[in-house]
Amino acid sequence: MKYGKLLIATSLVLTCLVTDSILADNQTKTKDTSSQEIINKSSEKQYANVLQTYNRFIYGGEDERQTVINSSGDYEKMIFMEKQHQPNLENYRYAFYKGKESGQELLLVGTQEQGKYNLSEVYYLNNGKPELLSFNHIPTGSYRVFAEVYESGLVTRFDSSKQVGTAYLYKPTENGKEVLRQMVDVQMNDVANSLGVSDQTPVDLNRLNWKEFGQVNSHKETISQTQKSSKSTSNSETSSSTKKQSKSDEAQKAHQSTLTAYGRFIYGSDSNRQSFVNTLNDIEKEVFKQKLSEDNLDNYRYTFYKGKESGQELLLVAKQNGRKYELKEIHSIDGGQSVLLGANYGTGEYPQGITEIYESGLVIRVSASGPIATAWLYKPLADGKEELEYQNEILTKNAAERLGMKDKPALDLSSLNWHEFEKIDTKTEEASSTSSEAKAEETTTTVGNADLNTLVAGDYSALKGTWVNANGNTVVFDGSDHFIYTANGITNNTKFTGSNRVQNIPNGDYGIFGIQSASSSPGGPPLVFYPAGMSIPSRTGEEYPYTEQDRIMIGDGFGLNAEQIYIRQ
Image 1 (cartoon, rainbow, N blue to C red):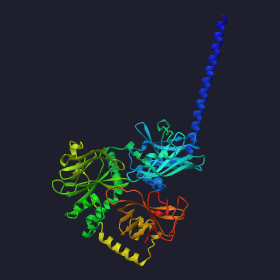
Image 2 (image 1 turned 90 degrees about the vertical axis):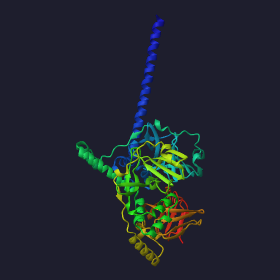
Image 3 (image 1 turned 45 degrees about the horizontal axis):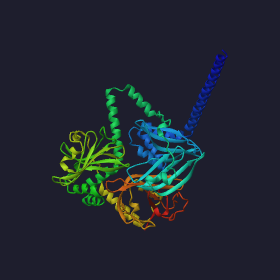
């Protein structure tokens, strides 16, 4: 009996101890959860400006997105421009993370795809102000950036051009960041090892508490919602037509440089056409060379088309013959630029180039040499393309079959809404060019701030001449939108893309100009123009020479060294 009472008493004591332990553990978890919620709410406030910017960009419509791009700094502008044409922007999420070696919570931005998360950008607080720390930028051009966040809270960044670049290891501190290590000439596959973090574990993004960005309730959206709730069938058709027109307007802007080139070629003089062809390389040269001998160039038309499997509206160029349209070229947006995707050119039984677009939006391209050819099947993405299929050394006539498209319906070109190219008055342009040249001879070679807006508007005549840097590399401008860039013995026929803007900083205003190879391949780093009298901002504290002269710089990450500076001879 005594033993029975003792067992009961012992059981009660153990029960109380276990209960107290569970309660204590639950209280600890509750405190941890509550503490984490407080931290997250605090971080929400600290990063409020960045979160609001993403809200506006994702849900604010095309005009709002462009406003965000125009008001962003260089790197963020590049990031948002890359996102501008991406589908499913609403898949972007954000989360906060603080590792043991980090002095602050970082804001991570990523995309959700099929339950998995991919890191896009990393922000930190610099004296309480949110700033971009690292990001993943992988365009089709040469310049790219890779980011990684580790469980410790350390962050890496790798800026590269092709396979080699500069790697940074950051430690977020309470009021900023500390650069623990910086390595140059690092191979893309050796970043972690070069920075000494190969033994560290990257953050498992799928375990973080990701949140959706809140929608922006703009006046336009309120009107749109009201229209949706009360629209009739006719309103639905009008809305669909407006939306389609809006997309076409956006495509028109994206391909404007290509449309202008066609207008000048079609309505230009024979000498102008030949001069234009001489500036082209590879496929584009063959395509336009064939047009030189064609009659009725004014029968060329253009339109835009986006199939269900295409991530963008493609620019189609065709020649009209009565009610029929013969497809000539297909252009896409790749790396933010309008580039040639496929073309029909060459004569005889086996043309050199063959292209076809299908109702789905998929495109085939065939490069033939007699009866034998190489063929590709492309899926246009929001920016760029995905190669779905590749066939080499096949019979030209079997290309569609070998690419799996034999039984797929080709696009009915006659069903599309075709437009005439804008007529360019080349005589006026020639007179303007002659006048500009005469004026340039009467004045000094300094461009100055007064002409910066003219350059950005697309009149490059003020740059005419030969520019040289400390290494003997040269840039030769003829006053047109094409120029010759020679570096390390390699000559590149290059052109302005029309993606120009004025950048404002405390030192003054300078111009940033998008450039690319004059062939079909998209190009990389920008050309930057600094007017005479403006000091060039330096990342190293170095004072650059030739402040009294106009200067240009070409290269990824301008402002890195004086060797990038070109002055006019």
